Length: 348
Image (cartoon, rainbow, N blue to C red):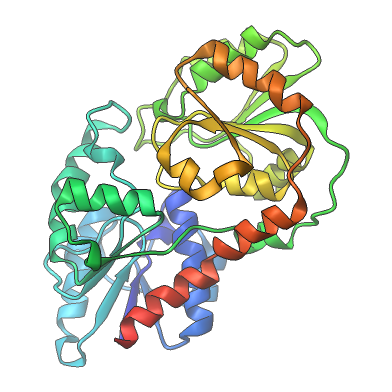
């Protein structure tokens, strides 16, 4: 029997939770007998109903995952249950885990995450990687990093890329005229380098353009709180912390340029979303961006303020990417393929 750890329905929406939600929808379609299990505090009722999530246990968070979920599966031992964990963690005592590791950010020395978050993940991730029956991750770059950092055999890891959510795919692709907007989307987190982005925009010094940063604060990150003051001091900079998917679609559709200056990523879904809406994309010169997006984006040194500002000017002069190039990316990177890879593994 295939069970899915659906604790993600109780968590704040970020890239990890979006992957988990969209892969789960595809698994539900392709393997209807899969059983989704979660704690009682779901924050996504619509998704929980679609997946027919079964609420078990009395605890929440990591305690639910490590205790309630494990004890529930232990009772089903004779049925040889397999547990698919889509969001970086799993019950450590369970021996039949399939685990998706999205990145190894908590293992880095940088002060990106809260102390508690780092402590939990630094304990769990290496042990789960070794004990899990099989691993999945979201890019070839991440696979190589897991092999090197956690000393895991490459044969134990398959790649299930991110993609576009159903909501974005169903949105009208006919674009309204692009406005002079530079957009960045992602959690308010030091890893995203929003302060550098703001200073680069100021150096860009083009009063016709507006910079919009759309992202939410989260307790798991050491948030970049200083950007509020920086944004408030410039009339051409707007910080939006309440944007839902509908609002994001409007922003992508209007933006001419999209920017991601992250220091570290496993995939970065917003870049794919921006390309879908025909934005010109500037991003950090990271190996993963070269792997995933290739010539569809312009990479630059995210620590070099002048290089970033120069790329704003260069992007203005560039044409949008051809629609067929974007469609090719979306055919490769989608959740239907990812769910199939996971389910195909179970057939072996």
